[in-house]
Length: 282
Image 1 (tube, one colour):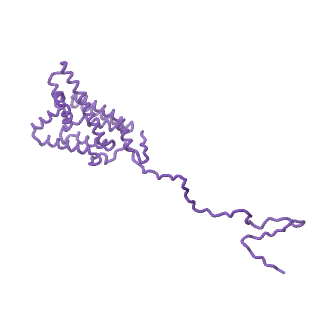
Image 2: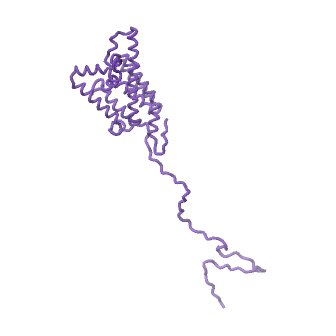
């Protein structure tokens, strides 16, 4: 009589319950579940662990803090208010010097001159008024250079610091050149006519700001720019020899260069990314 064996999910273990002579013990016909073992499961999506720190997304790539962009070279009402307002004032005085009555213009320039006579009578007014005129008027290259240099510096360090560097260079270079003249006249080395001379313009403050702006560059371009400014000043002194003005230009460049480390520190702090870390310098 034949009995039917139903197939189950696991293959039947056809073995002898007890080994004996002629009946060796055999292994199961195929792999089967082991008692007490857990059945493996397929890997699925792992739920995020609240304790696992999340990696922040990378910050957008930023341009080097010292590299100027095109918009940094042009003044704007919100970005460079000092440069814009000062340039408009110089443009107005330049137009008046070109279109106004020549005698009146001469009287204004004489009263604004930073000579010993004016400085001894009204020092603050003279220092302020002398910086409101550009030598050469609206066609002067100083006006274009001032627009570019002050705008680039103000974009990096702000309006107040840019104005501070300009005023510092203008005032120091003026006083350090006029005080020796007054002393030389007092001891008789120079005639009394040296107390009155026509000296006005923005060159001292402009050169100081250019020297400070060079401090924002890496070392090699920084000293190359300072050397280029110095070479331009030497070439200008050979064409238009004026010892007093030439010394003033050199002192203004030294003043701006001395402001370079402070300006660089401020620009790095203002140019720090969202992480708060200041950009690296060369």
